[in-house]
Length: 255
Image (cartoon, rainbow, N blue to C red; front, side):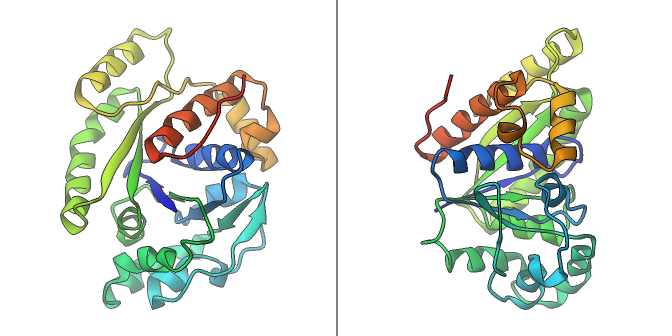
């Protein structure tokens, strides 16, 4: 079982879209996929069309009591540990729990025979939930917007990842992913050039095509289900191929 956390301490980088759409695409290719929504905003949960979530359905029991993962929801051919807004309560409770940041790693070790890949959607913070998600992973997938704000966030991002690496030296960045890229803008091209200079390994940029992303999210469906033959669908396939290669997962890009 491969465990990856899609991580960036800044919001608006594309973490949730990557988690949902890469996870769905891998599931459609035959992988047994578990997605974990650790963000109290619960965008991954709602963007998969999942509602009526109780706090006991979330990772709250793992973070605050070291209990096993709750039974996942089945949705669109994959499994989901959903989130809801009061998952944020775990942030206040975790400092009083010894080893809380490692509790998700322990819980996932108990289900290693059940899944081929686990993808964790991290909250946009450096809090306890984000640390728990990062420290559960074998690799981090780090989306970076091709904007100056993406570049400006890199020093802080590196400092946080160094802190996590000190706690788990085997944790690596599997892939940096340039997101929100518009090749028509010289600004985006310049930022991408700098990302290529400083970050490795770096995926091909994910173009900014907002309409399909937004419409699929409103429909509660992954892009691969909502608009599989769209340009965004092809972008998702390419990104999934990059991530599968990093993880050593079998995956064949469909034309």
